[in-house]
View 1 (cartoon, rainbow over the protein chains, first blue to last red):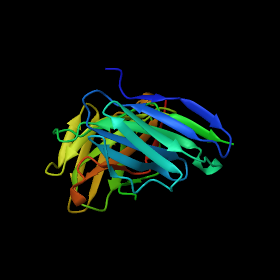
View 2: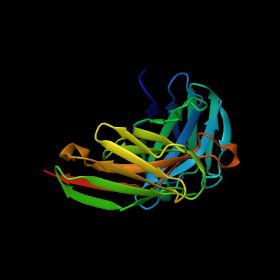
View 3: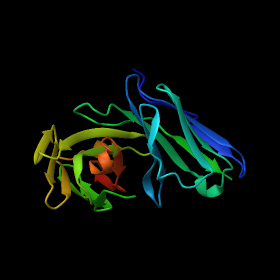
View 4: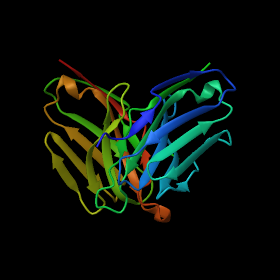
Length: 115
Length: 114
């Protein structure tokens, strides 16, 4: 398996533009997480899907952020409109919840810079 | 919301020394996990300890868990320069039936000098 695949790896955009981050989880995993990492706040859980259904989106900062998981093999995180304070590294991770080992596998991240 | 808090925030040691990092958390858990992150990369799972376990070993890693104190420690023995990275604890919380919802601490940045 290729692991969790995120795209793009880097994104530079202007304030006000829409940004879409993509994630392909590991095949067979039933849970998907979106995290945001900054120096100031560390690694924050934004949203958590189980069987494609959002279970906990309490970490989504505001209405400008939205996430979807239309099927078991794809998820998107959208920011519209983007702001400079959204600049961070965004990680997607997947796991198999319900097994005896709920370890998460992380993608390489998308480094977002909003100017 | 933050669940795990690592201590210290940064640790600098010489190669060959042992490194100990601590993690405290707030709610009851199903398990606690430790991850490593090299600069600019994604997190990599190191070891998982279940709530009914007290100690676990994996190679040069030793993890302890004290559920009464809601704390865990990660010991890396005979450290190497290649162990330089940030280390995070993550809790799989059992509250609200949200098994699998991993919450991470802010990490300990370990620097091992050759």
